[in-house]
Amino acid sequence: MIQDCKAKPENQHLTGFRKSLLNPDEFTVTFELVPSRGGRNRQHDRTLALACDLARDGRISAVSITDNAGGHPALSPEILGMEILETGMDVISHFSCKDKNRNEMEGQLFGWDRQGLSNLLVISGDYPQRGYSGHPKPVFDLDSVHVVDMLTLMNKGHYINQSTHPTSFFKGVAVSPFKLHEAEQLMQYYKLHRKIEAGADYVITQLGFDARKYHEVLLYMKQNKLQVPILGSVFIPTLPLVEIMHQGKVPGCIIPDALYRKMKEEVSPSDNGKQDRLRRAAKLLAVLKGMGYNGAHIGGPGLSMADFDFMLRAAGRYESRWPELVAQLNFWPKKGFYLYRKDRQTGLNRPEAPPRAHFKSLQPLYTLAKFTHDIAFEPRGPLYKTAKKGCLALHASPLKRPFAAFEHISKFLLFGCQNCGDCTLATHAYLCPQSGCAKYMLNGPCGGSRDGWCEVYPGKKRCLFVTSYERTSTTNSQAQFSKGFEPPRNWELNNSSSWFNFYQGLDNRK
Image (cartoon, rainbow, N blue to C red; front, side, top):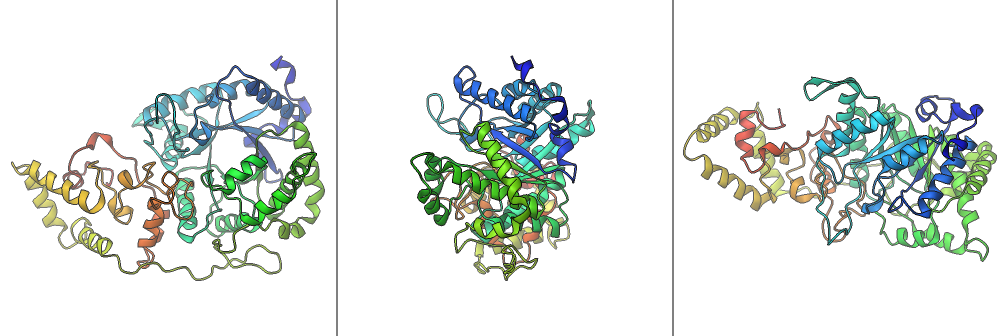
C-alpha cells in the first residue's frame, strides 16, 4: 500500500528538502509530525496517511519528526521516518540531546546515515517527564552546539582522531526570537553564533505570532553575517492547546493576552475558530515569504490535507499584499523585549538598537572570582607561573588529597561545585552549569526559559545564562558568549581537582 502513495513524477523535484532550501528561488514549506506513544495504533496510521497525502500533493518539501516531544516517550523518529521515506516524502529527523550520552549518539547517527535519514534538526530536547516507576534520570551529556560540531567532523570523515567514511548530514538548529527579556533574547542569539560556527546548515525559529519578532531574527542574522537559510515556524494550535500555552505550560512558547482573547472570541459552533486560525497562519506564511525567509515550518495537532490546501491557497492570495498584513500579526506583550527600534512605516524593525538595560553593578563574588582567575589562571596573569609551579608541586606531594579537598569544599560553598574536574566557572560568569542548569548546558540556554526562570524550576530557579548575562552587563564581556564554544565535559576527570587538571593541561580548557 505504501508503494501506491509515492509522489507523482512531476512533483519529485519539490520533495527534496535540501535542494529546495538551498535554492534561493524557492520558498520551502515543511510540516512537523509528532509520533504516537506506540507504533500499533490508529494515530500512527493517520500520521502515515497524512504523509502519503502530502507526498502526492507536492507542495510540502519535507515532514519533520519530533524526538520525545514534551519530554514524553514516544515512537523513535527513525521508525516513522523510514516508513515515510517510502512514500516519496523527504524527512527531517529531530535529533534531541536528551536521554543519550555521546557514545549512544554516535552509534545512532551512523545508523541514521546508513538508512538515508540525513536531514536533521538538532535540539537540546525537553526535560524528561514521569515514566516507568517514577521520574527518569535526566541525561544531557552534550548540548546542541557539541552535536553540530560532532556532525561536522563526521561529515568530513575525520572523527576521534581516526578516518571514517564521511556521513552526509544536513544539520539544522533552532533559535527563539520570542523571549520577553533582554538577557534571555540576547543569549539565544549568542548561542546561534556558536551553532553556525560549529557547522549548522540551516535554522528554524521557535513558534510565535508576532511579525516584528520574526523580522528581528532575520535582521540580526543579516547584520551579523550569519549566512544560512532560515525557516519561520507557523503553528496552528487547537483551543485546548491555546489554554495550556497561555498558562505558560509549554516551555518556550508564548500566547500573549491579546491573541488569547482574540482566539477565544473567534470560537464558533461550527469549527471552534479553526478557520480563523488557519487564515492567520496563511497570513503569516505570506509575511514570512515577503520579508525574506527561505521557507516556513508548519506545525499543529489534528491538521488534515484539506486544512493544508486551504492554508496554502490562502497564503498564495495574500502574498501580493503582505506588507499590510503585518499590522494584523502584532501579538507581543507590551513590555516584551525588542532588539531593534520599530519602523513606524512598515511596522517591522529599523536596523538600530535602543539603549541596553543595565543590571546590578556590584557583584562581590563575581568580582572577587574574576580577579583571582585573571591573576592566577590566565597565562599573562602576574601570579600564573607561581600558582602553576605551586600546584604542580602540591600534586607531587603528600598534600595532594588535602589540597584537592580544600578546592572542592571552598568551591562548593561559593559556587555549588560538583567536583567535575573540568571547570567552566570562568566562562559562565562564575556560575556552575553542573549545579545551576537542569540540562547541564555549556554553550547557552536551551530555549525553554520564561521570564528569566528555568524551564524545569519556574519561579524557583533563575536560568543560569540569564544570570550570566546580567553579571557581565557592566564589564563589556558579554561578547564572549558568541565566540567559539565551550567543549563538552570530560567525564574521565570526574571527582578530581580542576586546578591540578588545568595546570597539567588535562582539561578541555587547552
